[in-house]
Length: 70
Image (cartoon, rainbow, N blue to C red; front, top):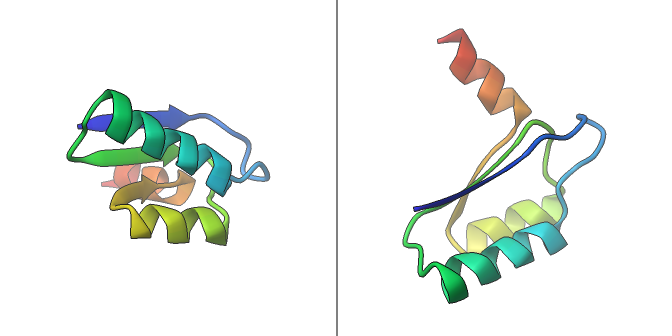
């Protein structure tokens, strides 16, 4: 399992280039079966589509807040 976390302001969304880098590291260097990208901000539509296509689970700031409330 490979997890990457990015602390960002809500206005600074994670874009597809960052997801592409994560994909490269997950597959080429770590051979990870499970991949999770976590951010305190949000993801662009393109980043979400790419992550879905490549089997990467995404967690954003809203997900973190909901988890903390439980």
